[in-house]
Length: 241
Length: 327
Image 1 (cartoon, rainbow over the protein chains, first blue to last red):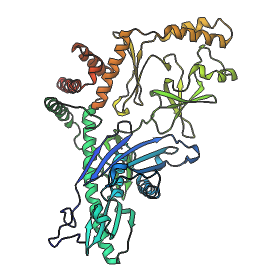
Image 2 (tube, rainbow over the protein chains, first blue to last red; image 1 turned 30 degrees about the vertical axis):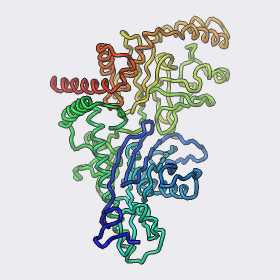
Image 3 (cartoon, one colour; image 1 turned 60 degrees about the horizontal axis):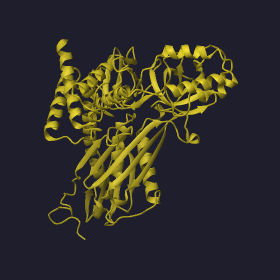
């Protein structure tokens, strides 16, 4: 199948190096400490953060840092054909772990000893790149909850199809069988906290694809920063003196 | 807009926007570029010695924010004041909390902090009002003082060496809160002041603005009266018996006149509206909003309608512009 037509356009009309439209919103779950919705094109994810709060299971309590937990789930209606999978299947356990580790790398957990931070992410619409969207939503929600972080974590995926590197794959491109590289970075520190690939790529192509994904992450970061700054200003002027 | 899921009609949304714009213009003069987000650089003069405060971290020789908030500078100290975050206790803060566990010699309280707070039996006045050592009987009778899910008002005593937060309730004004509503609002909307207990005598209600963002609105209680009653009860020797008489009193006292109930709900709704709009909550503003709702002849439930939100926003804009003019 042809994923990039001769004019250089992809199936959904994007250029190879073009991202889908981003949209982020803060404060969507009223009872959570922090919450956000993040959309990348048709992929839509909601995240809620609770904490830092008292550790629920005493045996898990850490005396020098906070315990970070993450739960990823996919709504039954999120995919094309309605699926009924039990909670905690292999895929969602893996993604929960990935998100937890990625977020934990940036949270300053040592400032909140003997407490726990819960991150819940749910996919409302799945159209490829749910992992990235979840990480971006979780970052927004954590920042909204006022949890100290080294840096914002942002994530974006990139792939390689028809001999061209493609940024931000959608579901059709994702299931084409080519490589899918998901990268999560700390944009300010220029460090990689997540790198996943589910196929083989040649060394030099891989570097190109990864570079493309990093560019995507930086674009997401500048967008997220904009949202957060706008939100902070809103809260401050409304509060008044 | 955060938390504000209202069905505004066109006119209302225009008015709300206008009021908010006015608020923005009023505050922007003070500090326009002090807002930072996570990982933003904070501009400081590195030649001066500076003290890094909360919400900042040094990275490659630069000062970087770790929170979203507003940069504050006090002499050498530079810190980021977080807006939306959990409560950070300071010694002497008056807080409202909910009992979640009765443990040996202590109660555990949920206070919107990263851990549960602890109120020791020894750091509160006994109901009989005398100072003495707490005996095993007192410990067994702890549930007669506070039970699980009771709402309590107390003061932050300090951190223990193991990091847990201790409270105290060594005065008649602290203790169990009855006959009212507990509201939870973001703690950054409560300003620390001299007075956190407020008695609104024209409505016959008490308002306690806990520093942790828990607000109590309840029927007014005379603390002195309670004390006197307890002292008279004390003539009966056995403590168990005095407990029984207390519960009888409670049964008699459960009646609250409907007007007071309405006033409680009205005030609570005023606080709800203000906190949803993200305005600072002080007792003066709350009273103003309650008066506004009464002068408009609104029912209590109508206060949560879209129109009243717009009115409150306009009122607040008007109030703040008056304040700045007066300066």
